[in-house]
Image (cartoon, rainbow, N blue to C red; front, side, top):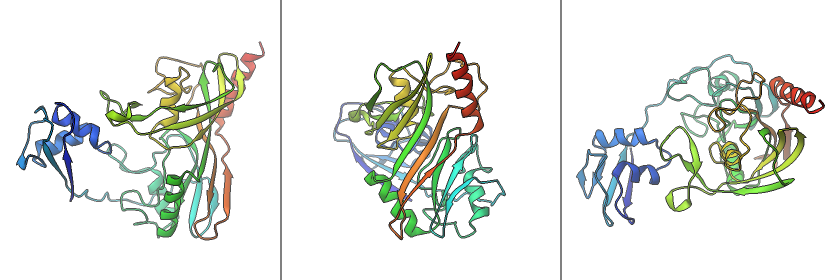
Length: 309
């Protein structure tokens, strides 16, 4: 069991809203469930009301029961391997593949495929997400690194935190930015009303620093192919930042809803194109390029033909 102690330092706010802003790794529904089940103490007394207002100086204790490990099963799912040795594995992930099991996606995930490919993977970096150092959204394609040993896991995580590992993406957006390149530096946090979405959230309200560098690769009439480079790795970062500046990713049903490009896409036109990292043992730099899927190249071909009319 994990125990988290908090001290309220701001003006009155509902208990569940306060916990949502402080504990962003937990969904609001999960926090409400913990409250209802008696796992939240307010000033040393069990509190089962999510609507009670907090006062400055209130002490909150949240008890998070240990998660029961998912029964992970190895599944023979094809993998597009870009690099592999005894320490790490780099894949070109296909669209529609969820990275790790979660409610609603108990199997058929990348982790299930990895367990079939790497029998010694269980336990590396945690039982629930063995080997997973960073993730890609279900419908985002491209390069993703997997740790095959504890040493590799710790080393790769440190690289991501220190921003020495480089992750570069290609994305097709609606519209044409006014400048050739730019930097988006806007904090991202859980959407205040829709827990399945992320949003631009001020840091004082729980948002975390998020920085995206971008540069135009090709203008395609009312669309643009953009090269993105992540300085940080927040959930849905490129998608949220792109939408915020008025150029959402083509095919993004969450942050670009209501727009159509007339091309059948499995999801957002966003591809993790290049990944550069340091080998955890040799120290050598490894750089891989993941070829975009056929749907991505078809979209570009269609837009180029339209642009020539």
